[in-house]
Image (cartoon, rainbow, N blue to C red; front, side):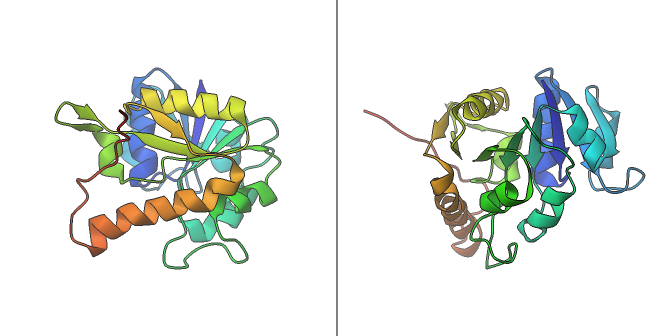
Amino acid sequence: MRIAIIGTGNVGSALAVKWADAGHRTYLGVRNTKEFKGSDLSSKNGISVHPVAEAVYEAEVVLLATPAKAAVEVARSLGDTTGKIIIDAMNIVMNQGPAGYTNTGDAILANTASRDVVKCFNTTGYNNMNDTAYGSTIIDMFMAGDSKPAKAVVRQLALEAGFAECYDVGGNDRFTLMEQFAFFWINLAMFQGHGRNIAFKLLKR
């Protein structure tokens, strides 16, 4: 699969490595191809660096992992996204988001041609993407969006990134719930002092 990653910080970098290792062709979309965060990724097999619109043009799937405040600007910079799956890994935290939106998924839908937007990879820290194992237990991922075909692709990408399962929590109307879930993790990890090495696992009986 051909995947564009827009946002080469901790989350984008972690997933770029995981997906390249799984055999996917990964395009890093950046403003300045000469100088950007995560530039060391360009030396890894399967990963190349391009201007944003060029990376999106080459890809079937686009991951957005930029600061939420830039969601509208970033969405508008992607070029034609018709028929492309967009994975939204962003969160509005402490009201730092795009003006006029309560979640970043809605901002993407309003500013791109894609109808296949899935919110995923936003509910845990990058350290848990680098290493999904807690002893013998493998942690879970979660997703939301209206497009069932897109969610099937995203679930497979989550499994290939090392998660045990990627649970579907509903449609586009659950985008805000996903961001609240992310803040729950942030609250425990940062504000309540538990640290980043905590994660979620859905247990059944």
